[in-house]
Length: 175
Figure 1: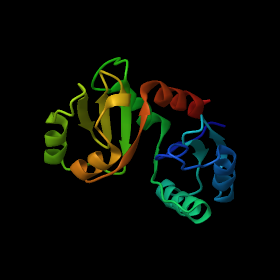
Figure 2: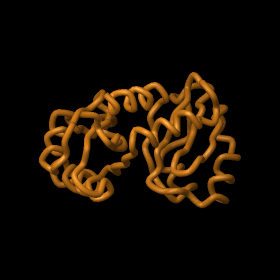
Figure 3: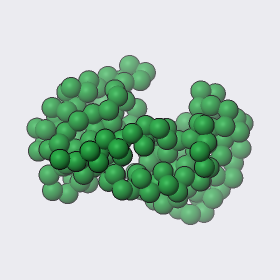
């Protein structure tokens, strides 16, 4: 059966913050999710959560925090929502395109001001709904655009995935 949610966990398995995908699948199952699977070891969970998806996301945050001793935001979308974000990607088929899934919809004026800024590496930015579209034209490795900077400017945090990973997550969730 296809998964009804794509659950994205911010900043795991980087910089010493470990979250084994086997354990993530177990935690999701313990919380009542069905159709549980993961994709690559960067906090991508596909599942059908029990009841309200937002409540599941918060419970998953709490379970990860309790077991591993760190807090990471959990952001989920339906496969259709991520497919729509991909279809609406503001910069076409950018070689270094990313979708940064936000925890909420930022203030329009703050989003406009943020997207007009020059971060020094040729980045192009657009906020569409709850998603920040980023084209790292010169690659993501040299950017000064950090999660903290995004959070300060937009008033919400999030987690990013490149377009290829986002597309693969939609395909996997639908099969």
